[in-house]
Image (tube, rainbow, N blue to C red; front, side, top):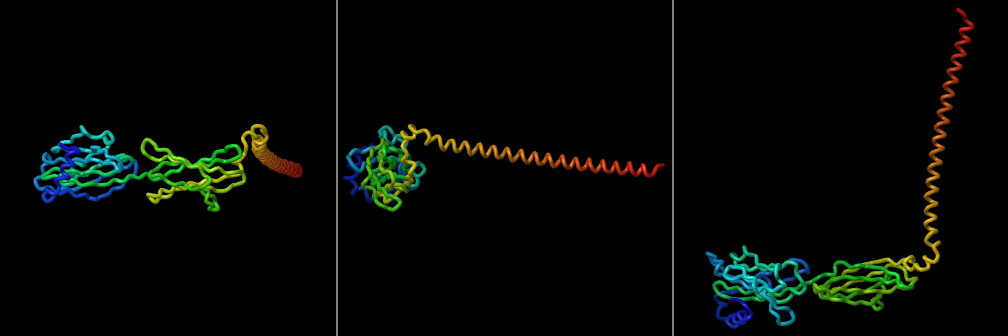
Length: 309
């Protein structure tokens, strides 16, 4: 019943039926984020009692570029008909059924893709026929930037990588806010999901220590995301030199071992000294008690000798 030809015929005859049956969009333009769910809708007149079997709804998409029209969802005489549904929308697009009796054709698309952007046609046939156009924008902010450091010969390579849409501009600067973008090498590839995978690399020479940052500016969305990293003198250490001179690695380890052993021995000595002191103190106390007992016994003996019974 529906198809591109019917859409064209309805456009030609629109002036004949618009006075009797008119479809209106809830809003002409929608915006969705990549991977999210979007619901777009149009309104059509209904009267009590509502008859679902007399209702047919068709949603189609015309991309922003090109002429390929894709069937997104179709309801024919109250029955879902997905035989001509484009593979891009299989399992992702449906119409909210309980809204139809209210005169609302609400198209719900989950896991939104970049390729979903374009012009959507909402066509309704009930007591008449009419259609309207709705535009869908899809964006993908550069939310997460991967910042990496890598030693390459005498230089240090700083790399920032992120995915998003539309194509972003990458800028670099140091902690003194000096613009280093002209020294960076930036490339991009398009992923299977239609996202731009951008990689930007800045090479830092020895002695240029400090904090560095990269920023991804999405001009169309007016969004700016940045990442930061510190460059230290240790980052320029030559691994080959360290391998040739093992003392560079062994010396800190030896110092750490000596420190641990010294702490252990000192703790043992302190514990032994405390134990000896405590033992000697107990011995002196025992001796004092014994001496006092002997003195008492001697005095008792002398007293008995001086006063015989």
